[in-house]
Amino acid sequence: MRRQTQKETNPFPFSDSNKRYHTFDYYLRNQYGGKCAVVVLDAGFTCPNIDGTKGTGGCIYCSGRGSGDFAPPPDLPLTEQYLMQKAKISEKWTCVGFIPYLQAHSNTYAPPERLAPLYELLPTLPGAVAVHIATRADCLSPGIARLLRSLSEKIDLTVELGLQTTSDDTAKRINRCHTFADFCAGYELLRGAVPRARVCVHLIDGLPGEGRDDMLASVETVGRMGVDEVKIHLLHVLSGTPLADLYARGEYTPLTMEDYTETVAEQLTLLPPSCVVGRLTGDGMPDRLIAPGWSRKKLAVIDAIDRLLYERGWTQGSNL
Image 1 (spheres, rainbow, N blue to C red):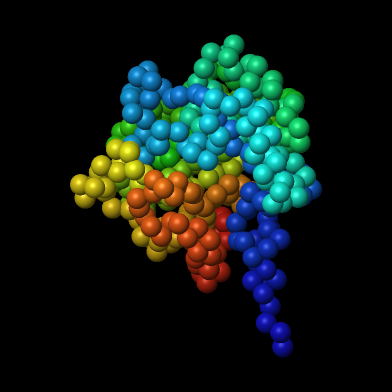
Image 2: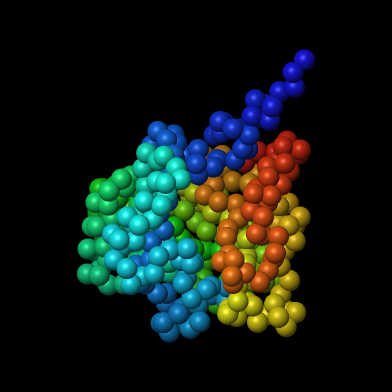
């Protein structure tokens, strides 16, 4: 008798593969009818914990590009950035649509008169089916929300909020410069003023001083808030950051691959099944990555998480 495959025995409803969680790829294919590609852009913004408004230096793990390391340089016009990357992606894959993503730093942290023409441009980019805008919840205001609402009425919009942790103690250690209460206020403003927008929340595993219970608590809290999407990242030690200095002094120890995969697998069981999982790890710039070295084997990490879920009979939301 033929043994059934993991795909054939997968009980998770939001999947057509062996994945026991709601992947971003699955969401896009069902939403737009085929493969879509994200095109990362850098519009040249900064953050309030970089420019001195709330702090300086940024979060202790943040590179000078503010998570936009894989985007083109910000001095290139956005349309040129988009078309250049769209052409490269199209050489590799056949896509039914593209998603311009303002990724670097905080992309609502500017006066409305600067943001308005930028937001008006994004839906007009050729092939764009949706727009993603990364920012911080404390960089939202009623005026900015009105701009986002207008954008959401022209094209599918996802606002990505960098939370990283729900712990205020950890937030102080990483120099985030806003509290969880600040985050909740911005989140509620966004939900009320821009009802058509999806909201994605970013979390980081392995932050200094946090144990597995802290990481599980962050995911469970965010899941209960009803967010549309969650991105889980591994904390990378990058050269030239304050975190690299802590690591060099022996004051920070990265997670092992076993600890990370065990934590992520359990985190998934605490997320509602309908919540899209945007990512389960991340990429550090190869020439700047100090640790952990195992994070370079991204596919091996994902495979290990898949295997744990299968072996334990877990699916996303199974421990709610």
